[in-house]
Structure formats: C-alpha cells, structure tokens
Image 1 (cartoon, rainbow, N blue to C red):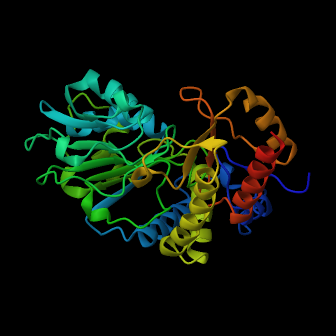
Image 2 (cartoon, rainbow, N blue to C red):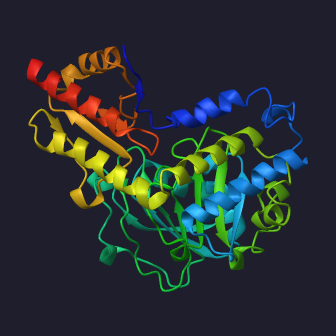
Length: 358
C-alpha cells in the first residue's frame, strides 16, 4: 500500500505538514521546554498561541472588529443548547431542517422555548434545500438557524433567504474555510473543529457583538457567550492543544493562498468526483445539483449487494473511511481542505476499475 487517503467525515484528515510540525514541537515548543499540552493556559506561551490563532482566523474569513471569536468546548452539539440559552429568552426562533444535523439542532433547542420549523426537506429524503419562497419565516423571530452543509446527506447552501434583519445562526462545521463567505450576512457562525479545522475537542463561535448579553439568567457562565468573550474564552480551561493544532491549520491555509485559493482546489476536487458518478450507470448521487456539497459527497452503488466488496477493495488500495453514515447508508467521500486532489484522483480510478470489474 503506497499511500493512505482518509475520507472520514470527522474526525478527519489533517494536512501532513501540520502533523509533521506538531510532531517536531511535541516535546519542546519553541524552546520553552514544554509541550503545548503541558502549558498553563494563562502563561505567555499559550496566550501568544491563542492570540495568533484568532488573528489568523480573522484574516482568513475577513472577520470584522464587531464580531467576537470564541474557542469553546462540546462541539456543535453543545452549541445546539447554548444558542437558545444565549439568544431565545422568552421569544421564538425559526429553524430549517435540511438534513440530519439540523434536525438534531431542532430537537436539542426545543427544550428551551418555542421553535418554529420554517422549512423541512425530510419528506424529500434531504435531497435539496427547499426553495426559499416556501419558507415560513417570522419577521419577529429571535434568529433563524440553518446548517449550511449537511455532513450526512451532502447538501450545501449556496445562498441565504431574506430574513428581514432577523439574525442568521449557521452551523458551518463541515465546510467552514472551504469557500469564501461574507461573515456580515450572519449573526452567529459556529462549528466543531474536527472536520475542516483541527482535532475534536474545540468548537469555534463567531458572534456579532450586539447579540451578546442576551442570555437567560439560568445560563451557566461557561455557556454564556458574553462571559466567555469578556474572559478571552477562558472561563474554564480551554481545549489548548486543539486550539494549537487549529492555529497550525490556519497557518497552513494562509500558505496555500487563503480561502479563495483553497476554494478553487475544492471546486476541482468535487467536480472530478461528481463527474465520475454522473458519467456512470453504476453509481448514483441523489442530491439536487444546485445543492451538492463540495465537502461531503454521498453516493450509492445501484447494486447494493456489492457494497462490502467495494469497501474492502477500497481499503486494500489505501482509500479509507468511505462507508456512508449509518443513517443514510451507501458510501460517502469527505474531501475537506486537507484532502489532496491526488486522493480524489485515486478514488475515481478505483471506482472506474471496480465498475469495469463488476
């Protein structure tokens, strides 16, 4: 086996230069005599790491000074509760269900107040984002929640509905930093790191300042965005090593030319795989073309009795973690920023050879 390509949806592949650098700095970070895992989170070494990590993220996404960047724990699922705790407070909120993760967000938020489902593609098996003209938006809602890339079903937003100034809260866990966005279109952007940023254990929240200070009085300090913002994300000990690795990923991404440059690579990778699927009667992708994800590409063998043989053969070729999510079945190739185009080329070559053999 010459080379491994990891198509896992998360925890996912990291850039090799990042892993090599982390390895070299594991025992002694910059002559400090300590591993980052051993440092005091309030010491000058780690506070310097944190400051640079935030600065690089702000540069990559062009985040304005009117937004706070928080480095929290619990992943996107913890934010499902923290969002209503920080924003709902006696009001109602709008939620769109476009896949398994946004459905989970509704279930988690419902414990905290009145949640209105304004659009739901579940009856259509999550194959597209419902046309915005059908969304039943409330102009008085505290916020609109969307998941802009559904990791399970491979559905991605390309734009947003007109919310009439209602803040948009977006779970971008699986495609943040993969394409250019206008942060100013959002009130809150959040995401777990383990897909396109770094290792599991870190959740990044980008929140507009005017949305701080609205939390329910029952909100614990560690879940209160304003309290965390006022304390540089250190109400509790932050996930310091995950932040350090995220910082290395941001540096790597800047070296690639930033988000605009990596987006061009991502477009090429996704086109290569989708073209292979579409040119075949052997494979199929069910997602509407306009909403196909660039990061998470689910596909099915028309003869599903061959699934196990496909996965076994792929593994023998060094193509790992291609089994689809248990909720949807089939196959799924997650081709995040750190997946080189050579990995997609190897997958396409294998898919074509497997089809010819069967």
